[in-house]
Structure formats: structure tokens, C-alpha cells
Length: 179
Length: 131
Image (cartoon, rainbow over all chains, first blue to last red; front, side, top):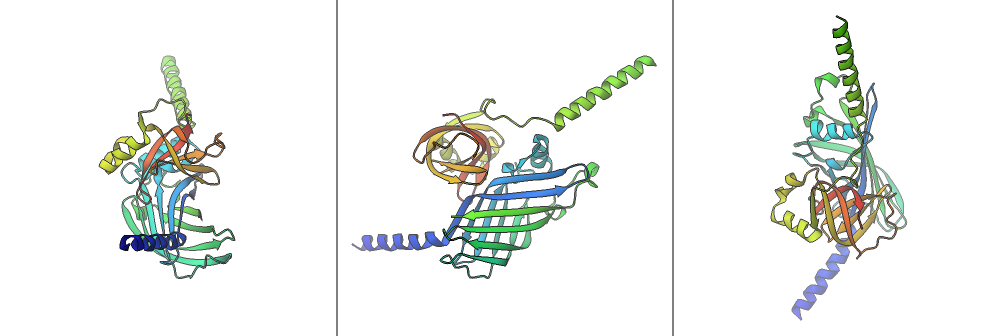
């Protein structure tokens, strides 16, 4: 009997928890870098993310090898020469925000300040960004954000030959839909 | 002298051709490339349970996996299929996959892109369904 009540308690807890823990495996992370020779754009549709509304935290895990480029050679260089994805397979972010987000009401929360830490290429750096969080009527939640990443800050070396051609900062765009 | 000029031009042309080929190098065609490894989903998950460092062995390799679809997560451009609760395969939405349902047994081929320690899943990208 005691076991049974414990099971019920656990199940209830699990249900409550499940509603507050929003997840996605299909978040989109893309970046753009403008160079005089050509523009570099890559997109990753396989980013994993967890949004915990009661704890006001958001976390991302982005596998670098899952970025897709227009040209195969760019993809190869990105993985082997720039981010060394074999050694550092993922970029991670974990952050917190202050807004109370109500899942029961469809609403757009603009300018949500997210403060956190980013781990990328073996380097941990603080990263603060502004996001837009939209609660849809079907209870799905969108999170969109845009922020620059300084390559040098994460120890990413740009070969001297192309140093003047590649911008020191790349612009990252995040677009996640949680269920 | 004339010979030197001819040789030099040949070298230059060859270099340019090679550079052009490299630049426009075709994308890896997963379907027509032989897979480096072939496992059942259970076997592959077991390998990672035993040793997470097995990642380095499989990195960038083409793996064929047979397993049961435990979850389908639709995205805008691509979708994720989860096999046996432990392997996530990214497939393009343009792939003929409308008839896929959860619980189905499939054989899929993709490039190993890492171990996602957020959901504890083995990630394969650019997957194609074999059957």
C-alpha cells in the first residue's frame, strides 16, 4: 500500500513536471558571416534544448558536426580547421531569465533578457542575449534570439591567409519551438 | 624556353582545375557510399553505455542502424526519428517518409555527428531510410 501511494505521488509529480519542462530536438541554430569573397551561411536543424519555466532556465546543446553548409568544402573546413568538432563536438549554452512565463495564455514576451554561460571550442564565456518568447494557443512555445560570437574569444584561429576576409564576429540566430 | 612555358601553363591549369574541383566538391552522398559500420540500434546504444569515448571511433563515419521508431519529432526543414529511445536520426522532410509511424521497424543510414548528452542520444545526420 505504501508503495502504491508512493507510485501515485511519483506519477503525479512526473505529470506536473512534464508540463513545465519544455523540450525540443529540432531547434534551428544558424550563423552568418559576410566576407568579400562570399557569404558563409550554415544551419543546424538538430539542436537540442530544454526550457524550464518554473526554474526560468534555458539550455541548448548544439552538435557542431550537424551544421550544414552550402559547399562541402566549407563544411569540412569548419569542422576540421575552425571548430575542431572531433575534439569539441558540441556547443552548449545554459542561461536564466527573470520573466514569469504563463503557459496558459497565448502571449508574446519581447525583450526577455537571458544571462548565461556558453561553452564552445573548449572555452567557457559568459553570454547575455535578448530573446523573444512566444506562447502559442496550442501551448507550444517559440524562442528566438540573435547574438554575435567573437571567434577570437573562443580561441578559434582564422588562418592568416584569410584573416582579413573573415569577419572576427559571426552572427548566430536561434529559433526553437518547444512542445 | 618554349618547353618551360608549356610545362608551366599545364601546371597552372591543372592547379586551377583542382582548386575548382575542391571548391565545388560535391556533398557526401550517404545513400551511395558504403557504410563504415552496421549495427542494430540496441547494439549501438550498448556500445555507448559501455564507453562514451566510443564517439571518437565513430566520428564522421557512416553507420547503418536497424531499430524501432520510438518517437518522431517534426521540424520545419528536417525531422528527427528516435530509434529505441537512444538514437536520433535527422532526415530531410523532402525524403519520402510520410508513411513512417512510431513503432515501425526501419533500417536507416547516416553520418555520426556526436553524442548528445542533454537527452543522452546518439546523433546521426543526413540520414536516408534504407527500408
